[in-house]
Image (cartoon, rainbow over all chains, first blue to last red; front, side):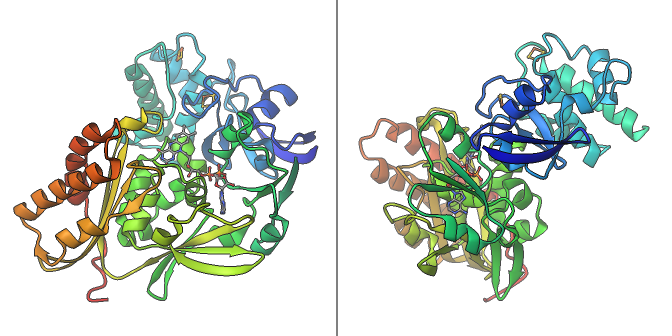
Length: 156
Length: 280
Ligand SMILES: Cc1cc2nc3c(=O)[nH]c(=O)nc-3n(C[C@H](O)[C@H](O)[C@H](O)COP(=O)(O)OP(=O)(O)OC[C@H]3O[C@@H](n4cnc5c(N)ncnc54)[C@H](O)[C@@H]3O)c2cc1C
Ligand code: FES
Ligand code: FES
């Protein structure tokens, strides 16, 4: 076992994990952040996306030990029903959520983009969302939702 | 399995011995661990080694630390102007999440046939800095890729040196990593020109055979010539010959031989960089 100290959604946790335990398992099983979803488990679908020190990563490909001393944002740290993030509101308003399995990852990719660039071009949005797959909605709705959120965030 | 987080290169190399693996971004290693394809006794994490996270241009070289991620390299103006082929490869590699995590050192360490970083680095004439308990070594990437195994036990890839001599470079690829091996192809090219005349060329192919390689035959065919329409056609036809002879009778040969002409044209159309210095 290895000691791990990490910050999730601005709260610090100390725990012991196996060296080959994946970050997604640490988040879901040990810490209960079950909003992080496992789709493919091999870096292809983006359902497990979290923000690690400001950048999106696939938590199914990160070992827990790699998060030592670092800051993570999961979907639970973005907003909730009572106080949704502009991206979450825009997803609902544009009908960009169906089964919802891909949504946490999508929202985190969009948030990471808007945190850095509040006025992205459609092309920049396309690139930022390209690591997140959705089996249900058309991507149009998702891209429109991100555009809508961008307008709100940038006040345009 | 033991886990060790190294704070500097010395510590990392000291802990690396039989059965140890270096851990960079983990985008290859995490899956290989999970599938039981590798069973390390010790995992030596490099994420805290600041010496490996460097990028600078000095002494006529662009120096890239092995722990630089594809996202970092792909958003660097220095890389775009000095090593356009590599910069282009960084834009199309994986997905944003993969690029945020995957390192250039891990790309060489894993050394898959379709590793996107290798054809650009070969075309740019990169040297690789290696370090182990036995000492340090600097070797051209082209030579290193001929070694079996690639790295001796406990050898750390410290970084890459790209000579800054006013070469233009370009890159193009076909197919994603998960596409059938038959549908993948990548090409890096660098040209040192005088006016419209190509003086020196380096061309490297990826996903054509087991590892990326430089084609000296193709370079010779294209050097000391005007870069006109005929030359472009010769480049496309020459690339087809190289692919045909590298793949022989393998099933992917006809498809890749046809496809490489377009990939070559695209790579040539993407040539850029190297303007600042002339005659170096
Ligand atoms: C969904 C997905 C898509 C991908 N798409 C692409 C793609 O388009 N193009 C592409 O080229 N690759 C792709 N890859 C493969 C992978 O992301 C790259 O090979 C990446 O560069 C590996 O870097 P890493 O830092 O994650 O390496 P790791 O997984 O940490 O390490 C890989 C190997 O290299 C060794 N190693 C790492 N660093 C060093 C070092 N400094 N010295 C010595 N040995 C070292 C490790 O021990 C290990 O054996 C993809 C992977 C996934 C999961
Ligand atoms: S579950 Fe991690 S990318 Fe699909
Ligand atoms: S809403 Fe079902 S996968 Fe995207």
